[in-house]
Length: 108
Image (cartoon, rainbow, N blue to C red; front, side, top):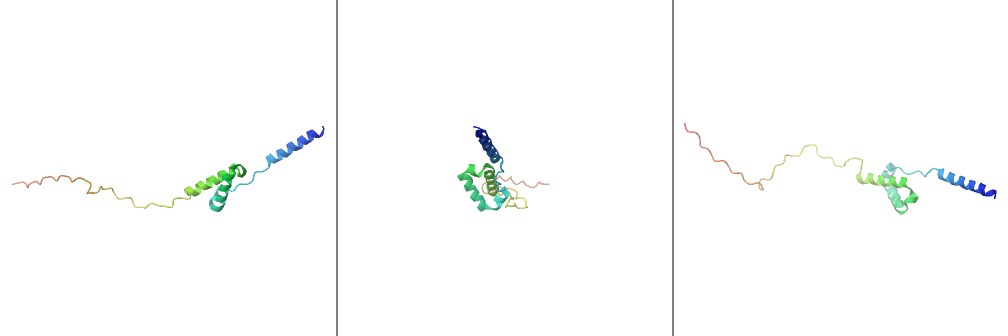
């Protein structure tokens, strides 16, 4: 009977130590963006067993995927420096305006 509290205390200490242990380090978003093969592998692991991989790592995988998709490094297309030309409607589609009647020169 005396051993029961000691066993309970030992089991509690073991649970406490396990709960306080450091979590496994996660791979950073930057390293995953730079390594697409590792990103693909971790995406598959997160899809298969999210709880085992962990929320922090799967969130980093999702952010790296988003950054690679949207390419946050900057635009690849740079618009031309010159401003666009003024808009003028095509002449064929506009109705012809009536021309004014020719005026005669004044007589002296």
